[in-house]
Length: 136
Image (cartoon, rainbow, N blue to C red; front, side, top):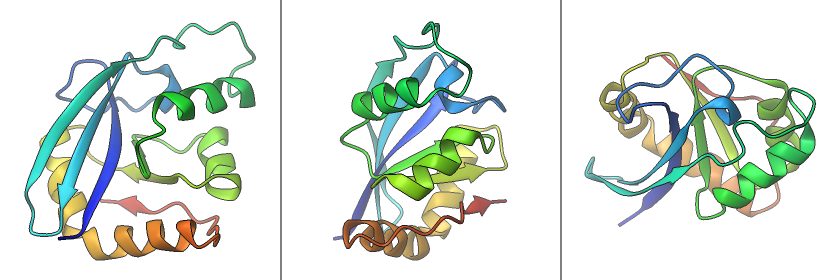
């Protein structure tokens, strides 16, 4: 069965803040299956939230992606300069969700599973689409 492993940025495990992903307190790592099942794998504390770097700095982005290296999709509540750089230069697929409820976000991800799975496969093949999908 096909699956996606993704990170959802949150400050409380229930909502997705409308801030830059790297400014969230925690990352919740989920495994989503094509049949709609999902499981929370782990929670990762964002130890870089107060990194002493220029806002939107590439060093912070690289360090956060290292924390999230097991994920193929990074979910956030807003597009940021680093989300744009991520789309252009990395194997990670950024996705913006237009809901602040994590359970609703997971439903939207399940409903878009085929599209997201194809985007991840394209990235594994070296194809970098600069468009960042937004799920409403």
